[in-house]
Length: 330
Length: 300
Image (cartoon, rainbow over all chains, first blue to last red):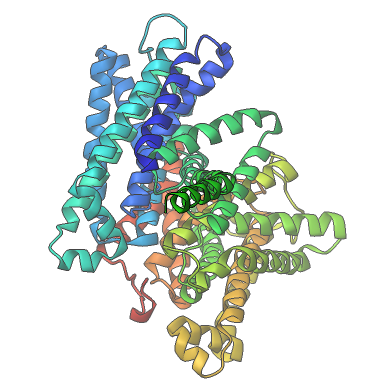
C-alpha cells in the first residue's frame, strides 16, 4: 500500500526542489548542476542498456560525442539552426547505435565490452586525426542553444530533457519490451526458445539508448560551447559507469540520482585533483562487492528498515489496544 | 628505403614481443578465471613504475629491477584477487560477467589515477639496460631494444615451459578446462585462481618494466597496449598462450610496417593506434574464437 503514494510523492518533492533551486544557487553550482543533468541522462540510459538489457557497452560516450559533433559541425559549417542540428545528431547516434547493436548480436558478455571499447577508441582517434574538420584536440567551438551567457535556461532545459528521457525509458520498460529485455538478459537461449525475437529487442535497446545518449551529447555541446575528443576517453566512460553503479544499474531514476550525486561529489573533491577518481574507483569496487544493487537502493531500504523499527513499538501498542477493546466488547 | 622498412620491422618485432608478454598474462587470467581483466593496462603501468623505483630507491641493477617489478605486481594481483574476485567463485553475487567487468575496470581507474597522484603526470625514464647501439650498415638499433626483446623472449619461453612442464602449470590448465574435474583429483581451485591472476599481473608488470627505458613511463602508458593485448588475445584465441605469443609478434611487426607505409606521418601515428582496435573489431565479427582458439576455452 505504501508504495502507491511514496513514489509519486518522492518524485514531486525532487522535481519541485530542482525547479526552485536556480535562484538560490551561485553561478558555479548552477553550472555544476546543469552539467550533472547531462551525466544523469547518460547514466540512466546506460543503466537501461547495461543493467536491464545486459549489453555492457563502453561506447555510450562515443554516441554522445557523435551527436554533439554532428550537431556542432552542422551549426558551424552549414549554419543549420541548433535545435534542428541536435535532432540530426540524435538521428545519427540512433543510426550508428542501432548498427553497432546489429553488429554485436552474436557477441555476449565481455566480448561485447571489448568490441564497444575498440569502437569508442577508433572514434576518438578519428576525431583527433581528422583535425581539419573537427579541430582535433584543440576542440570545436560551437554556438550556444540560447543567446546570452546565463546558465539558467540550460539548467531548466537539461532538467526537462532528463525527465523526458526518463519518462520515455520508463514507458518502454513498462511495456512488454521491458519483460522481454530482462528475459533476454537472464537467459538468451531460453528467451529465444519462448518465442522472443531477441535480435530485434537488442537492436531496439541499442538504438533507443544511443538516441538518448545523443540527446545528452547535443545538449552538452551547445551548453558548454566546446567539443573535444576528451568526451570519449575511458575515464569519462568510467565516470558514467561509476554513476550508474552507485545509483544502481537496475534502477533508471537511481542511476540518474547516482549521477548527480557522483558529479557533485567529484566537484566538491575537485581540489584533491586525480585523487577523486581514486575515491570513485574505490566506491565502485565497494558498491559492487557489498551492495550490488547500488548505494541508493541500499540507503532507501536501510531507511525503510529504521522507519519500520521506529514504528514497530507504536504498531504493537495499537494492536494490543485493539485486542483490549475486543476483549472489553467480548 | 628497404632499410627503413627493415628497421620498422625490427622495431615492430621488439614491441611485438612486449605485446606478447602482456597478452600472455591476459590469456592466463582469462583461461583460468574466465574473466577479461579490464585493469590489465594499469598493471603493466604499475610494473614500469615498480621497476623505476626499485632502481632509484633500492639501487637494484636494471635487469634485476624487472624481476622486482614482476614480484611487486604479482603481490598486487594476489591482493586484488583476494579482496575483489573471490565472490566470483561463490553464488553470493548475481551476473558474474558484469561484476568482473566493473571491478576490473574500477581497478584500472584506481591504479591509473593513484599513479598520477603518487608518481606525477610527467614522464619518467629509468636508466638503460645498456648504453649504446648496434650499427649494421645504415641500421641502428639500441642495446635497450635488444635487451628488452631478449628478456621478453626469455620470459615467454619461461612461461610456456612453466605452463607445460610444472605441476602448478598443469594444475592451472586443468582448472581452465574444468573446475569440477580438477577439484575431484585434488586441485585447490581457489589457490589456482589466485596464482593465475598473480601470474598474469606479473607478466604485464614485467612487460612494463622492460619497455620503460625505451618509451619512458607515464600513468596512461597502459591504455593503448592493453587494447593491443585484447586484440592479440582475441586474435590468438582466448586462452591460448602460444596463440598470444604469435599474435603479439605479428601485430607488432604489422604495426611497425604500417607506420612506414602511411604517407602522412602525423596521421600515421594516430591511425597506427586505431589499427589494433580495428583488427579487434574485425576479429570479433568474423572469427570470435580466434585463429588458434580451443573450443573448451570459449566464454561461457
